Length: 165
Image (cartoon, rainbow, N blue to C red; front, top):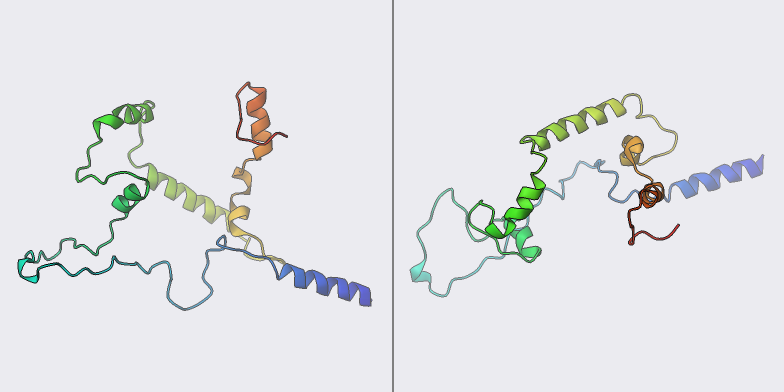
């Protein structure tokens, strides 16, 4: 009996060491959401305070975030002021649009994903041991990397970046 109790105790202690990392996105605290905090650019003092531009209420200023331009700069590009596609990227845009586009694809995917997650969550809140919610919800949609690489190799495709089986 002591051995069984010790085995159960050891198993319970080891299962408590599981690291969920960023996979469990639910917050169990009543504190502020740390992902909602938006850092601003540092304030700058101009060289000459007498030549300041006039204020423009409701418009952007130098400390406002611009995530699209920040991403372009981080990837080594130059942010543009217009929304038109540069002529150098015309062939890429045409290749991406060759099968047509769905204008509201983001909304459609968000709705279908929300419906899928809603269906998956019925009567699944009760578990004896904690489980990764992301993996549990998308288990049927996951790919086996080795089986997929083998399938592509059988079809004659080269997969040089995948380690040999």
